[in-house]
Length: 345
Image 1: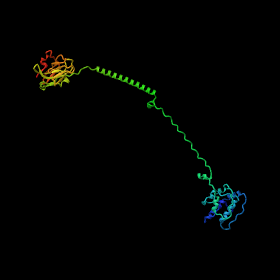
Image 2: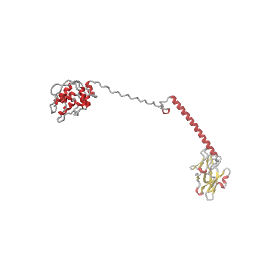
Image 3: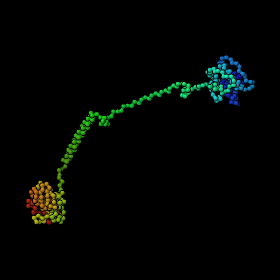
Image 4: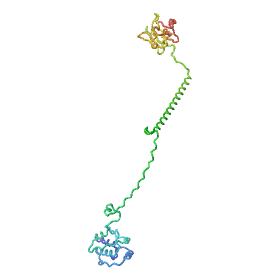
């Protein structure tokens, strides 16, 4: 059995916890001899011998606590913080015995003291480490203000580009800019007009040159053409359907009491206008100066100086009436009596 006077306070407290837990084996101080020597060297003065446990038996809890108080009163080193934990742990390592000596406390009052009261007395009133705001407010401790965040650098945007003149509204433009723009547009308009006139002149000159390369030929209707069979023209009828294309009236009427079919030229003998056939009035009437002609072509009113002219007419080989505009016959010259100027009806 190892002498209890050589045990440290931590070992004694561990042995006391085991004794209270019933059935636990007493702590065995396995500290090496070098640690015992160092403990003796640190003790400043010899301590009075503690009460030894009875021979051949286990020391009681009271004996262990008495021995712990005696060592604490003599100034021995207090147990480190791990000894104050509630959970049972094995004996402290040799390095724990070399902790900084704690301050001496007043001796507990005489009488029986339990383990819980000893552990409560060993605990400190304040725990190390950071504290909450509520604890700091209760103890009147001023907390350091939180570090201020560095202000973000202001983002410097590049300046907006200058709006071009064509994108400005009329309200944004100055009078000088408006005048300059109008002058520019006027100049461009005049230039465009000049180029257009020059292009038109060149086009006309080109067309004139091309036209000069071709002969100047008038396309006239043929001088000879057929108008149908003689029985297709009733007596007293004036056929006007050939007026627009050939300039001829085909007439079936009497002249000097003889029924004839002849072709009258549709040109007024006054100034060359084109008369119209008026079926209701049975006469030819010139719209220009009012000259009038009978159905046989003789003039009777207006400024017309002579009767209408006749074209040559004949029967073709196929039996149709053929008109030849290359020959004309005048009544004032007595040519209407020529057989080529009419066909007997």
